[in-house]
Image (cartoon, rainbow, N blue to C red; front, top):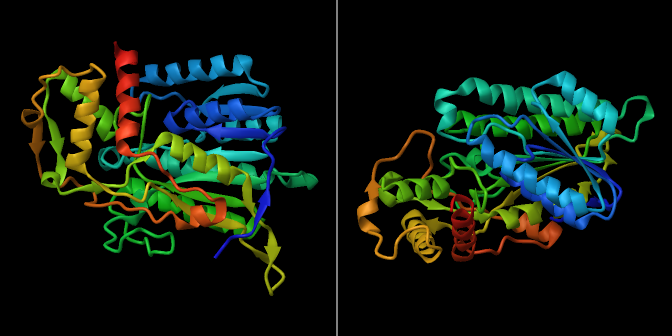
Length: 363
């Protein structure tokens, strides 16, 4: 069933993107600076050292270079969304029209041994964003017109019904990371209901691409192969993932930003939550062993690995890891119905672009 939307023209808007210069955030900001003819784009990130901060500095440099020739202005704020005072000051100074919350502590396995940072960023930080959105309407203010935030396919846990649909019950997370992302969806829904804040959650499915996160499998596997180490393939290779190239993710976010759920009243005279939730995934689960084969072939093609590289000798098949699930598979029909978009970039094309970037960046 098609969800009613209010169209938002991004030109002239003030757009806050938290988690930029993170992987997805940087790509989104670069897209906005390319497309917008006027307005302000605000990047907000704490530039922590969860992975190599040099990559974030590299992405920030790309953003600043793009901003130098863009029609829209760009502002970078270095700080954490868990810093409530800083979040409040940012909203009071810039009055964002659209907020895209991508800032979060990522990683399923990291959450097993480092729960504190997930509570701080994914729960407290997201609460601070919601509160700032709520108070943006104070004293008759125009307020935030659309809050878009990142959820994750991890919320589906061990769901055996495939493909995963946003209507599926997701009450049994298998990692703390997944639990925090499900909490974001619940909090956002309640704020939409109580304060009539248009909000849309996006469940991302295994995002990959150039200048991505080194903790992601394709990136960490590449670094191990280059170093001569074996890559561990979990569940003895019996794993399928719905890999989604970053340009497809950005295209989905970009379209969703422009379509805020309509505000309306229910029969009781109270707001019907202007709330929506979508999957963004390729809809084509790939066997992990096939994905690794394509990755290795593209790394050889790009000159990252030698032509005589020993593919078979580089793999180590191991058992399932805590927090992992054997398959992810997105039903993105809602996104296609409401925004006429479905991810389309295949793993061969996506991994080729990654391998070429890796060769260029690491020499």
